[in-house]
Image 1 (spheres, helix red, strand yellow):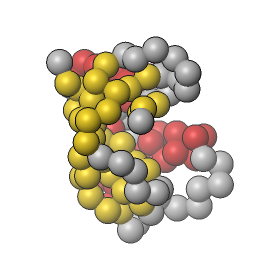
Image 2 (tube, helix red, strand yellow):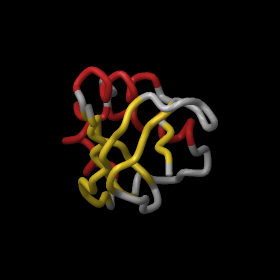
Image 3 (cartoon, one colour):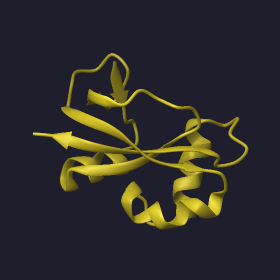
Amino acid sequence: MVTVIENEKIRKKLLEDGWVVIFREEPRSIGKDWMTDRKGNNKICDVHIAPAGTISSVSMLTPYVKDSGFETLQEWLGEMKRMNPRITRAIGYLYKITKID
C-alpha cells in the first residue's frame, strides 16, 4: 500500500520534523508503508503509520493542530474540506506518520 500526502504543509512537516499527525474519516491500515505526493508518483520516503486517537468532535482536534503541519484549526479544517468536499464534520481517526530513515 502507499500513503499519498498531497498537501505540501503536511509533507513538509513530515520530511523536516520526521513525523506528522493526519486526520482520516475512515480507518486506514497501519504499520510500515511508503509515501508519495500524488497517485502514481515515485516513492519519497518510507514511513510508519500508527493510530493516534479517535475524534468525535472538531474541538478534539485542537491539541493536534501544531502536529498537523497547519498553523490554525481553521486552516486544517479547510484542507479537510478541500480534500473531501462531502465532509460534514471532523469525526474520524488520527494517525501519526513517522518517517523511516
